[in-house]
Every structure is written in C-alpha cells, then in structure tokens.
Length: 373
Image 1 (spheres, rainbow, N blue to C red):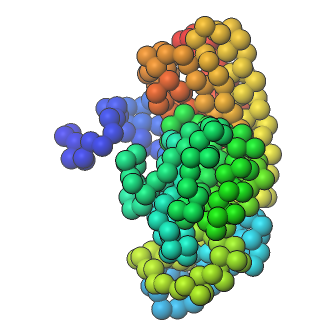
Image 2: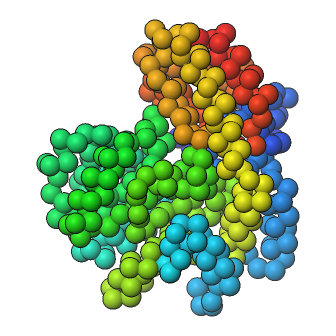
Image 3: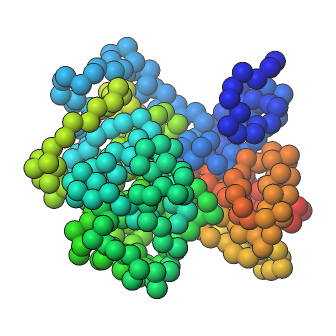
C-alpha cells in the first residue's frame, strides 16, 4: 500500500493495530514494549478501559456544544485542577493540544503585561505554531542556557512578558535546571513585573513523580499550561491562572475563541484521568518504577563509563546521555529492532514509559541495553 501521508517523520514499514497496557502489536504480528507512552501522552496504558467507558457514556449525551452556554463539566474539572495546582481561587480554560495551551499562555502574558519578549531556557519547546513555534530565531524569544548564572545579568528583564519554565526539557535531551538558577530567574522576572508560566504539557500529571514538575522547585507560577497525559491520548489540554492573574485579566479582558474550547467530552476524559491517577496511586508507582529503572541505568553507566556520560532521571522522565551521537543512534536503532519503542535525539536516548510499566519490561530493556552497549 502506498503512503499518502506527508512524511514529516520517518517511519518503519509496519503499523500498530492494537495496544495493551504498555505494549503495541503491529499488523505484521510483532510486539513492541512502549517506553515513550505513545507521544508521551498515554501514561495510563493502551487502552485504559475506565477512560474508554467514560468516553462511551459521554458521547451519546454531548461531545461539543459551542461557546454560548455555561460548561458544567469544565467548571467542575477546573476546580479539581486548581486545587492540585495550589490555585484554588484561580480560573481555567480547556483546549485540544499542548501547543494551543502554551500559545494561549504566551498570548495572556504578552497582553496582560503589554510586553512581547518571552524568556526561556535554551532547548525549551513552546509549541508547533504561534509565538512559541520551534524556530530558534524567533525574535520574541530570549534564550538562556541552563544553569548559566552569568548570562542572567545580560537580560533586560523590563522587556520580559514572561519566563516560561519547562521543568524537564523533553524536546531535546531532558534537562533539570538547578533550583537556585530557577529561583534567580523567577525573582528577577517578578521584580520587573513579568509573569511566570509553567509549561507542564509533558511534565504534568505525575510524570516526574509529583503532580506537576514545577513542584520540585520553589516555583510559584501565575499561569500553567497542560496537555498530553491529561487525556491519556485523547486531545485535551488546559491553561490555568492564579487569582491575581484572573483579576488582571478582568481589567484587560480580551476575546479568545477556538472551536473546541471547554468541550464536555474532553473535560470528562481529563476528570477521569485525574481520578485514576489518584485512586490507583500511580504517582507512587512512578516514583517506584522510575527509581528502579534509574538504578539499573546507573549500574550500566558504571560498567561503561567510556560510553555513557550521564543518567538524568526524575520519576519516569529519564534520559541516558552518551559521549557519542553515533553511539546513541546505533543503540536506538538496535533497541527498535529488538521491539522497544524509545526516544532519541542528539546523543541522548530517552525513556518515558506509561505509568503501568512493569518491572519485567524494565528488566527486558536493561538486558537488551547490556547486550547492545
């Protein structure tokens, strides 16, 4: 069969026909162990029967209802989410994708501060379009290298609308900035009248071993962008703002509309995702399984200190950095051939498995890595 899709990404000549917990099964009968959670989204497994049941119940009632009515499911979800974020008097809006959530966060920050510069740590991913599009030469972005304290003095903070903090860069090689570096940036931005945005599209909902990645820091966001795990693969995202930002918006109100805003189906799915994470204590499982995988990878590093530069891990957000990019490419390719779906960029191999990943799957991965490395 000829491929009629625009080839933005290279793919293997096989297709997934079924998922089961942390596994994929292809049309050619091969099983893959998923260490990427799809596109980092399906953290509760493929498929999750409880989420499927909620979708089945909601679809016959209403999926989409436009912009003219109050949104009961969205309001209920917002209250749950704001409590998790520590923003009990704040407000939220629900969209479809993480890129939309980040882009709206940036629009809010620039309009509410009347500034147009966005401060980010280099390598941060701000979305696929709009203010935050991938282009590194975006003139509205001010980039600073991770933990580069000297460069802080070179920034004109009076121009900065917001500092967008991604607490574990997923787009590149997974970076966890030092707490004092984040503290200094946060302090300077707030002192100059800018806003703080936590980009939790990838790190939110337990991925790093806490509900949100910024909770590993002394970081108090004004705005939080969320997505991915929030729908376990269903397209739903969110922007939440604290009380002060909500009051500021009332004084500088503007209209924002897109087709799937506060949709009841997406809100029903996200509410169920939060319930499952809570009731099944999945964040505890993230810490347990993440700690186990990190320990095994550190042992591998000790045995191959000439090849492995660093193991970076927080919860189930883990990367192994090699000294050689070619080595990372070789190992990534061989892991795929052996039936492991993993991420690779530059000289880093990334592991972001579903929260339901088993010890057996981790052991199989480590066994394969030992042979390949």
